Length: 463
Image (tube, rainbow, N blue to C red; front, side, top):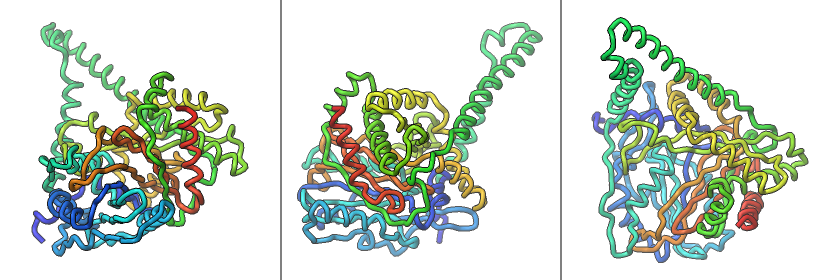
């Protein structure tokens, strides 16, 4: 095996392998409804375009020195594509997609696979299941937007990326970034440099102490808030998982109407979506016989940190990779009315606009790769006990896209939940509509469809 065929995973990618458990694999599942997509068209599309991302021919391999990408020397597309000819109804399709989520992934091949159900009710259903170590939702969304043009006659133009030994480049850029931060703290203003040297030295020392003290206080304060956030109350949503998950999804909702409602209320669409989840959680608490006024609940929400890091540390544009941190948003399940819940959600989400917490959690997840197993598990427990649900909001293409010349009519996804978090809610916007997807482990929620119905009815009442 040559050096070109093996590469060390970056910490942000390897974290998803280090923190997962056998009963809770950290994989992303995407489903698209694609009118008229045939097995032949899909296979040609994957060969010509999808596999142009070199990483997709590699699989992660654990060694004593860490996780490495290893090229699959016997790669065959037939291992990563299955076609199912049954004419699934809506309910049968939900059961089939759930079964795909629970299907083990072999660790000796690249950890992704497509399934196509061309005769599903409502149009051909294309399902992708891919391990999170390959990339986050934004990376995957960018891949599909590059491969799926806005016209059936247009072929993809810019696509693909080579997998190279990025760890050295990443460490070099990270070191340069840290040195630059230090130099900024040490470098005096121009006016100070022109002043008397003796006086400048005193000023320099004073400003240096002040600058480091200010930055240090803020960093310590942010870390303290992050670690000191109370753990969620016992509600039945965080417990030992069974490893059997069920999923469901909504019909597309008009994004324009939700945007109008959000604008008139002085909130964002994200606030509306979080309020709908809060209402569904409140109903779950009541059905469980608990008092909502005594319950503490958080949503773990992924937040992109690409714009907070310099070039060379996050994945390059068009390349697969992970570059987001997690914030823990308190959900006001004790709020009696939808309006109260909405404005309290707005208050909580605004706190994270300038917060360091996404970068802190991103760094902590990456650091977990280098910890011994016992400490790594302690870190995972520390983070995962702070949330009962994972909520993601993924922006997609604003206009309809075409995959292999066939129109994509719907997009929905389900994101993984680490630790003992067994409930996930995903919102995907596409072509003027928003789809909701819910996934739950049997141990925490036996009917994710009922939870989804409460979310939808709340959004409709709000809108």
